[in-house]
Amino acid sequence: MKPNFYKFKLNTDNRGSLVAIEELQDIPFHIKRIYYIFAAKENVIRGFHAHKQLQQVLICVHGTCTVLLDDGIEKHEIYLDDPTKGLFIDKMIWREIYDFSPDAVLLVLASEHYREEDYIRNYDDFELLCSKGSGLV
Image 1 (tube, rainbow, N blue to C red):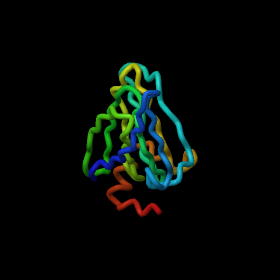
Image 2 (cartoon, rainbow, N blue to C red):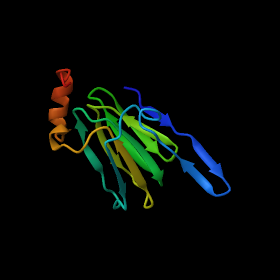
Image 3 (cartoon, rainbow, N blue to C red):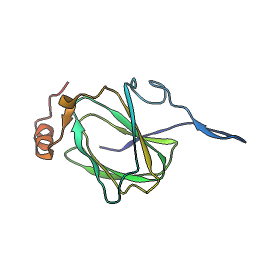
């Protein structure tokens, strides 16, 4: 697994800066859900799950945070600090998000609506599915 990033076009003039993101042009899926994490308490770790089908793009639009990605074989720690760069997280990738700066705002673009049954919340279950090749479609 190699982390995959999308670089978004930055538009800047004397009024400030703007980044526009369009589904299927700037990211590889239809956006069905958007949420953001902010005011994370010190030493809080978010995530601790994978998704069977859902894909996401994470953008730290303000401040910084760190994301651990795990595909059951490799682990990568990614530092997010650029509002023009989105981290793609495919299905069947375990994620943990931590080291939020006090001013961090993490925007998440998701390919699916919230469905609890799409979550894998137990790491042992995740490893078992990975070792079986998951077979999820």
